[in-house]
Image (cartoon, rainbow, N blue to C red):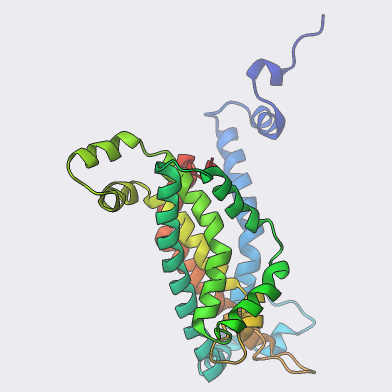
Length: 303
């Protein structure tokens, strides 16, 4: 009779089991080297393109397009002319301001609607509650291009084309379903006994939400806020339809400012791309401890 395999004996299967079997005991040096080696390769895979992009912003155009590959420029080859060109461009400044206004407004409005809606779906029973939640998520399954024209007609009828309000509403519609789903999952994990205790002490439903639910659901709110901000910040499709001029266009359009029909200023374009990515990175750094807690708590399962 054949002996059971090591994988079966240890109860480990798949890639994780094979990796553990390869590197040996959990507390060995071989295990530590294997883990750190895998993590190093993982981060190199993601960080090298970002570092390459950042280093290209301080190179001249001739070095960027040179036949010889120069990853790290020498001191003599470093220039900050690309940053000066991008940051002093009035159109880029306007688009940066527009992106901040639209993304922050979208995040605030989506969180207000998402928290109230998720609290309602999590704590109250009424006819059609589950159908309503499914209907919200069904909208996320539709391709954005499918709702683009109807949305434009609706905004045109309301005279909201080429306005902050129209673009913010469009971004809220796109981000709210998933934010609602995420927040409901986190709210469901908070024991309803806490609500009942607060109600006995005289709190209204809004006070229970503000003083009990929201503080305990900070990781979930951080995840929803980050997702909403990035969705709005990176949107190009809806802004391209609902914006008719530089007064409401956002940073994804800023990447085209330094291109013409025949030439591309790669130094300025790469610098604009780097500056466009910085706010999302800073926002992630501010809320990353809550995002990690949110991912680890299991509150993202929804229901």
